[in-house]
Image (cartoon, rainbow, N blue to C red; front, side, top):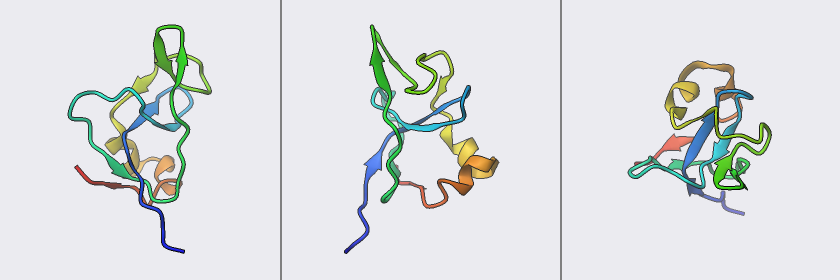
Length: 84
């Protein structure tokens, strides 16, 4: 079976340090090739898209590149590649 290629937008929850599928990306947000990984998507709570674990959007950030470059999170997501 070939590896699945999935190009999605990502965001970071700065409270729980989860890398999430950004279902409400900013204009011109980069796409990432996550291969077979399946990041949790943001959830809808009233009028906001929120972290599914923290149940708020207060800690969400599009600054995923910095996390992928050097924190412990990149051990989990080492095969992510920015494609745009």
